[in-house]
Amino acid sequence: MKSAILVTGGAGYVGSHTVAALLEEDTPYEVVVVDNLANAHKLPGQNKPEPLLRVEEITKKKIKFYEVDIRDENALSEVFDKHKIECVIHFAALKAVGESVQKPLEYYQTNITGTCVLFEVMRQHGVFKLIYSSSCTVYGDPVHLPLPETHPTGSALASPYGKSKYYCEEIMKDLCTSEPRWRVISLRYFNPVGAHPSGRIGEDPAGRPNNLMPYIAQVRMFYTDNTLILLLEDAMGMAEVDFDIDLLGLAVAPKDWSLYSIFLLLLRLVFIGSPLLFLRGLHPQLKIASEVVISYLRLQGARSVTKCGDSNWRTLEGRHL
Ligand SMILES: O=c1ccn([C@@H]2O[C@H](COP(=O)(O)OP(=O)(O)O[C@H]3O[C@H](CO)[C@@H](O)[C@H](O)[C@H]3O)[C@@H](O)[C@H]2O)c(=O)[nH]1
Figure 1 (tube, helix red, strand yellow):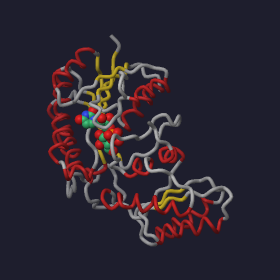
Figure 2 (figure 1 turned 120 degrees about the vertical axis):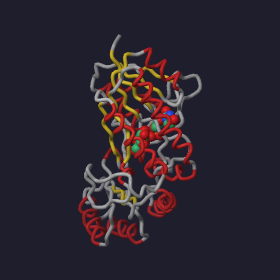
Figure 3 (figure 1 turned 135 degrees about the vertical axis):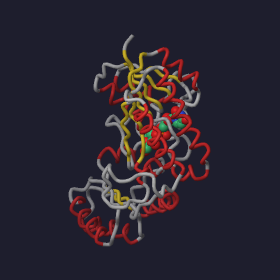
Figure 4 (figure 1 turned 180 degrees about the vertical axis):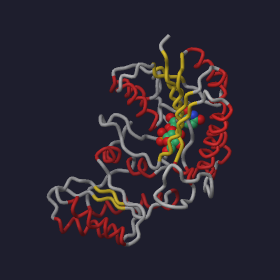
């Protein structure tokens, strides 16, 4: 039997891109996905969630999919019985910081109980290699910036989501102490954004997006000055709830704009006090203009100024499903 990598939550945003990357890299492993579709789409009559069908289409390779909840020990165990799993990449989790404050039990049950069930099943099947999808939230309130990996974790954690990721990291440390065969890597993402170069997969949550980038991606893009501001105000409403970002702006500068118009647009975004600056490099001189404005924003004490690369723009522009 071929050795396999199990990807939990592999139909989700980061998971589906990871599955694509594994297959594109010609992994010698069979790729097996479990996902309970809590935040992924499967259309009626399809045997796999849409993102995985698209990954198969992009890579021309097959994925083994099971609709399984990680809290269901028996169902999970059956997957391990059917495949020669050597390593688990664990993405399955609930991930919205704001929502977790409203629904702490759901978050602890899924993110901690589910993760413990997974670890138990792994142990029973002699699987000890794990890549865990953690979060920058484990750092809590930074004691110093920038944040190295050695920065203390676990203090002043504001949300059940952040706590669930921190507790899981502590559980993994205990596992490694208890049994030297455990090999664990924890990845603490900040704000993952972007989409596959094909544009066929991206972040496409079920229901109303809880995070900023897909929220914007699922709102229509407006290219005229006035409607652009409407979009921003809408997104800023979200930003107040969920995000700790200082400046929000969205600059879409058509090629024929003058440098002066670009400056006016950027400055307008600054003056409406927006918490994040998205810049699109369509205009040859936008880069120069944006560097000037970004320097200005930093002088004003902005902590977070984001420039979008091409893949982020694909996320913003594409409705993926
Ligand atoms: O009990 C559950 C809950 C969720 N899911 C699935 O897990 C995936 C999660 O993906 P998504 O909601 O798109 O989140 P990502 O943006 O991919 O979040 C990744 O990155 C976050 C940090 O940014 C981590 O907290 C998450 O664990 C990790 O999946 C989705 O397909 C869900 O259907 C399950 O299979 N079981």
